[in-house]
View (spheres, rainbow, N blue to C red):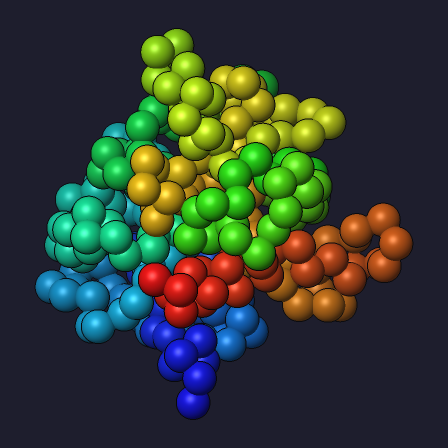
Amino acid sequence: MSPIASARIGVITFPGTLDDRDAARAVRLAGAEAVSLWHADADLHGVDAVVLPGGFSYGDYLRAGAISRFAPVMEKVVDAAAGGMPVLGICNGFQVLTEAHLLPGSMIKNDHRSFICREQTLVVENTATAWTGDYTQGQEIIIPLKNQDGQYVADERTLDELEGEGRVAFRYQGWNPNGSRRNIAGITNERGNVVGLMPHPEHAVEAGFGVDNGTDLRGGIDGLGFFTSVLSSLVNA
């Protein structure tokens, strides 16, 4: 078995998580083993990377991701991320990463105050992270977006630091669907092992079920690169 095929990627389920099975399927399609992790787990069961999927963890009470930050498994995720383990937060998972201070800034209600679901074009701004290495700088990808608390906000100093350090991983192209500052759709930490974004790459990983890519009806698999990228990063670590 190759090092890539033997990788074990954990997918965390919180109460209210919706997209854990989709994320696990994306992991398997990329060629790795998907390992289910529960919010109350006291360890990460030897996984090589972790995905925090989308949904409405704990019903988004208080604010999105605020309660999940205190789940027992998150203590282990924070420690593992500090040690360099790749961690991906998708939508609600991105919100949890900001609440856990693994990524800066915060997520608030969309500026139009409504839930939105659409196929969204992104520009890949940073290919030096554990989750973006299989893309090219400036590449445009189309993946689904669905959120109501998707507006990324931070103070100007933080935004300037993200820009200056090249830590904006993805930017909305064509239209900003939620009012996020500087059209930011996703960011990374300084080390590049932790990435969070609001759109859902796990919903664009299989031909025939993906988004329209302009040339092949329902054939878009632009999200698969997230999951193949992390496998490559683990091999090269």
